[in-house]
Image 1: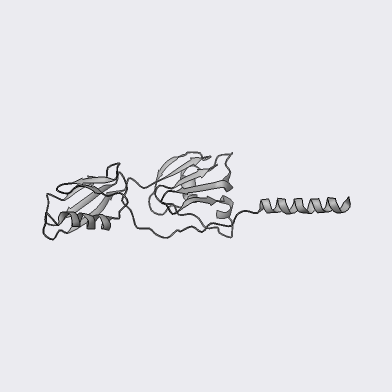
Image 2: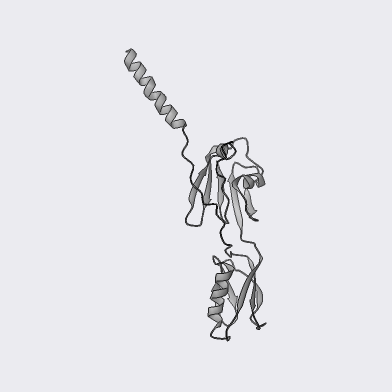
Length: 190
């Protein structure tokens, strides 16, 4: 009975230790991304030497803008340069050698969402590079019941999916990789 008992405790110990080990860190792309126009942004569209076509215009909730002569144009999801090129192509039938410039006057679409066990869950504007730790601070920090090592960042850009994050890894001396947030990210603190 001694061998069986020792074997049982060895197997149980290995199983428990294996359960305590956390998953390896997920590699997160924190590289700078070009700004993409979003819904509710306000744009300055300038067509050189054509004041009738130049205007300040909001991006509608459906992601389109309405321009004279060319009608509806998809703006959301494009960089200002891509939108300018698209408008240039559309105006070529009406304007000889159009030169179009798009400037983002107001950034209203760039937000992150923090939900779960934080003091002030909600939507927060994303101004510049904001890290996960900074977003949690904006939301007032964790509540007493938060599982700070079970945080999930849900990335809606199609490439990210769900990014599990352990807060203890982020603040450890080893310096776990902080997540730089992108517009539309949702942070869930269980």
